[in-house]
Image 1 (tube, rainbow, N blue to C red):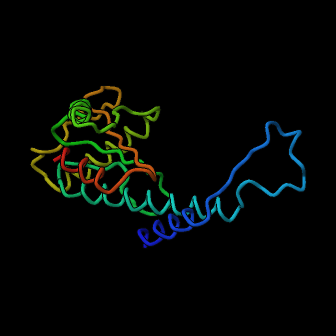
Image 2: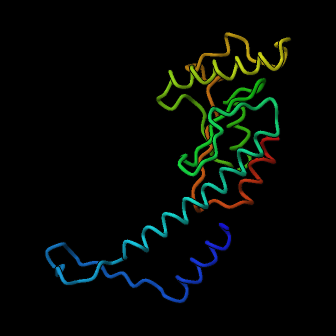
Amino acid sequence: SIHEDIQQASECTSQQPLHLHPPTNNSNRNSDDPPLVSIPTIREAYRLMQNTEHFLVTALIAGLRQSNRVHLLEDRMDKSRLPIVSFIHDTISSRIIVSHCSDHDIVCRYGCFLSPRIVQRELERIRATAQSRDNTNTNTMDKDDIQPNRDSHAVVRLSLLHYNTVSEVNHCLQVLQ
């Protein structure tokens, strides 16, 4: 499990600290010097970071899925995804959601993030899915809402990294409720 992996890594580093003494410049490095950190150690560090990020993103996505008014742009949860979650809300603008999060010490952004065509396509997909679920169209987006260049209808983006915690994800989900 991820918690066991993190525990093992912390025990390993606390028992065998790395002593890194890089040379002042590359010309002083002797070709016989061992590497500062071994390739297996680097791979293991990346594996642990990826597992941690996957765990956190999975928890965030699961929490966001609890609301039928929240629509995730991509909700696959495999380990190859970046730890970024983008979503829109049926009735609350992304700008207002980000402002509310900021008031509660949560850093997130809104916009199209240099991908207006992708956001446009995803918003259209979400709209079609929402309309098929609710033919009355009362709690779904209007056609005018699908304009990613307007800040009130852009996506909210949350980014997580290996140093985030489960309690931070839970706090974020509580603020978003």
